[in-house]
Each structure stands twice: as structure tokens, then as C-alpha cells.
Length: 234
Image (cartoon, rainbow, N blue to C red; front, side):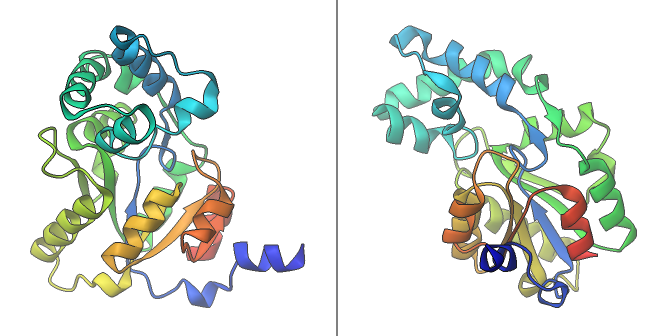
């Protein structure tokens, strides 16, 4: 038990080097379960597919649909694109707003802003929908940049999103350092993407993944809530 606590809450000194915080959206910033659930049901209805239970639906929150529709449903390319298009029919005007911020997110963003951190959304959700959510909660002006997937699929995976984020940061900040950048995320997809991009990942356990999967995927720490995370990084 003691060893487990030590893994989840490392000394502050190991976290101080970061100056730029990349953040995932679904499961890290906002609980988007309700909107995604309803839009998935709408998208899959023509195929006669009914996802049973919350755990089945949660698997689709975070990774790109082009990956999860193939992996979990066995869809062919044309089916994937058709299902995504139908999903967006409901999600863009309605489902995107069926979400809530996790407790403490606003306070965390403001605290990091006051401390001088660069804060960037890096999400596999399409960038336009990330901006819609941030505008709903009046948070877009609190962040330095928003980077998400593109609707055409050219930017889709976590690695592609992170690569685009690096490009924008290098253009905007002369002193930007990839080595001083950390990704905050809630699933192993975040930790996997961070590892592939050559940066650290810090996990949160209140989202759609678990502490165990994040640590197994290489996250340097996992925190249970925003208050503990703020205390560790600040």
C-alpha cells in the first residue's frame, strides 16, 4: 500500500522542470460522456449496433473514431467515414454542449496562468469542437493555444496532434522547449502519444482511464483530483 502511494504521488522536485502544459480535453478537462454516448447511439443506429453499458461506451472516448470503430466494431473504411459523418450530424450542433467541466479545472488553469505556464489544449477531438466547449465555459481566453484533430483526418492521432502543437509553439515562443513540456491526460492513449512524442505524461484518474493503465503506459505520476495536481506542480 505504501509503495503504491509513493508511485502515485512523487516528490515535487521531479515535476518542477516543466514550463509548458499540454492538456487533453475529454476526460481531463471535461466530462463529455453524455454527449458522446447520445451521438454514438445516433451514429450506430443504422448498423443495428447497440453499445451495452457505460464501460462499452467509455472505450470510444479519447482515441480517434477512425481507430476505435475499426478496433472495436470491425468497420471497413467506408463504414468508418459514414459513421463519423453521422456522428457529427448530431455532435456539432448539440452533443458537443452536453458536457461539464471536472471539478477544479477552472481554478487549476487560473493558478497555472498566474504562475507563468504556457497552457495548450492537445486533443484527438476535432479542434473546432474543442473551441466550442471552451467557449461554452468561457475558458478559451485563459489558454494559450488550442490544437485538435482536423475533420479531414490529416491530423487525427495523438502523435499527429502533439506534432502540430510543437510546430505552433515553436512559431509563437522563441524559448519554447519540448524537453520542458508535459502532457496531462486520462488514458493510456495520452501516455502512449506522449512517449512517442518524447515528452512526459502526467495522468489524472477521474476521467475515462485508470491510474493503473496510465502508470503501465509510462505516466510519471497520476493524481486523483485537481487540488492535489496543483499542489504538486505549483
